[in-house]
Amino acid sequence: MKIRLTHTSIRYRLTQPEVTLLSKGEKVVESIRYSMMAGLFFSLIPKAISYAEWDSIRQGSDVRLKLPLKDIEAWANSDHEGLYYRMPNGTDQLIDVSVEKDFACLKPRADEKDQFPNPNEGKTAC
Image (cartoon, one colour):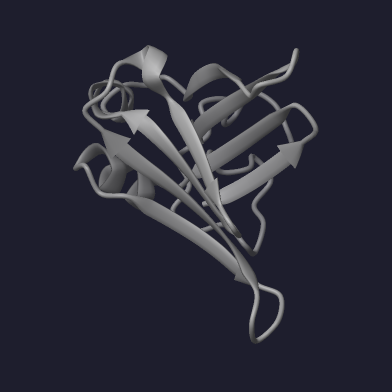
C-alpha cells in the first residue's frame, strides 16, 4: 500500500493482492519505522457499515480507516479506479479520502510489483 498525504487529503493506493484481502473482509496495514521505538501505522479495515459511516481513528501513531465492506466488494470486482469520500474532521474543512487501485506506470519502473494493468496502456506515456 502506498499512502500520500496533503493538508486536506489522504490517498491510499493498493496492489491487486491488497484489494483482494480487503474484499475478503481482511484489513490491510502499512507501516514505517523511523527509530527503534517509533513508527507510523496505517490500516484499512473493512466493516459492515454504510457509506456515510466511513470513519478514521487515530491512536498515537496508528491511523485506522474503516470502510464499508459492501462497497469494497463491488469496487474490487469492477473496473472502477477507487472509492472516494469527503470526511468531516471537526473543522470547517473536509478531508478527501481516496482508496484506489495502484495501476502500473506506462513506463516501467523497478519498484513496481502487483499493480493493476494500466487502462491507458498503449495510449499515452507517464
